[in-house]
Length: 193
Image 1: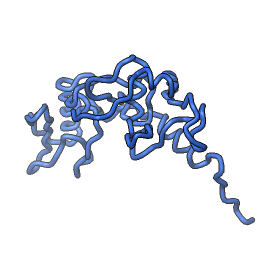
Image 2: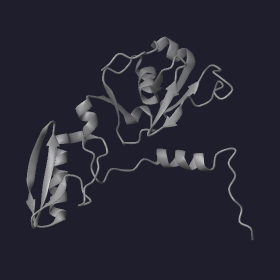
Image 3: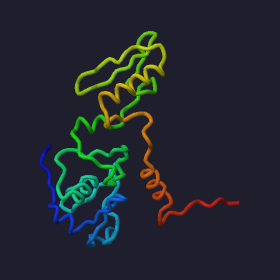
Image 4: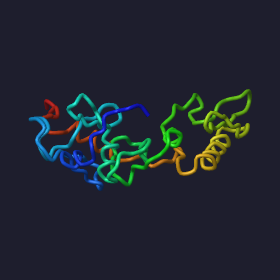
């Protein structure tokens, strides 16, 4: 990993509070009129919450949460088990290698509508990638058979890091989005009846 500025764990504890049950980081100190003490720290950019540290550096909230909870910065990557980058509860975070993190990442689905499955002549072919190697899982008459073979291969080769099609969707992100739509200062349109 490249060099980056990491504040000390003591400084994190001075300025931030972490609730492992909710995954929220809150400011312990007044930062600005927009970030008073007790306010949720950081802002959502893309799929993650980032905490601006004031030195021109933004830290990913899940890394800060990990550091506050465990008393050390993570050595490598932090994976969100449920795939929701806004769900920073400690039970949803685990330290992983880059390869393990990529296995659990969302991937594009091809024209077949299934991961690792594509048309090959008159049959359906299932493949899985392990590191830089592609493993052919077989050719099948139906797409359902190919999907089942891919799921079995994913369980076999990726184990607990398998993404899986039946993964439960986290409510955390959908609840956050709903709160943002109907949050303070936003008015709902009233119908002119």
